[in-house]
Image (cartoon, rainbow, N blue to C red; front, side):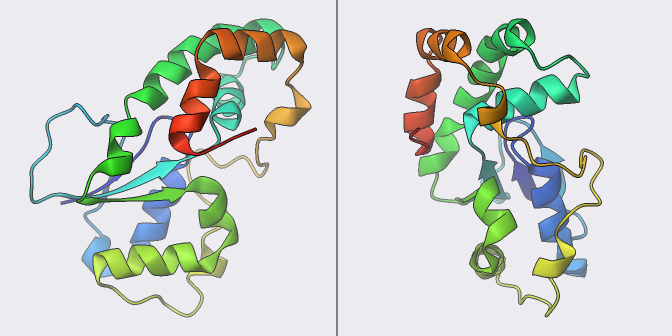
Length: 172
């Protein structure tokens, strides 16, 4: 079984679409938000996706149909940080490929690395077919900088957001 995994709002639906575009060999790939501590079969393959944690928080607020203001952003932080921390263990897992959301959308070499991991070849228009068309796609990419301010930043730091960014390799 092939699992496309990551915390909510990191791009797991996009990752699943990318994998399904490889063809029939990947038709049974599944979407998952199961964290690293969940039970997994040793035979399972996993492709894990990470995303800038600040964008994840803003995307979560938007997904929940909440106004993107100081109160809802701060209120969502602890939950999303906890979710993302549950996936940090995948970064050092030898039987798991981790990709970055931002790179998946911008660099065809990321698709090539997924194909190499799965031992599959890319279709010629694979990268061009990636954008849009998933159940969570809104047409806009979240940009945390549009909503972040000193109050939100202070809460982010006090709740462990910077430590999470460092663990994931995102440095402001």
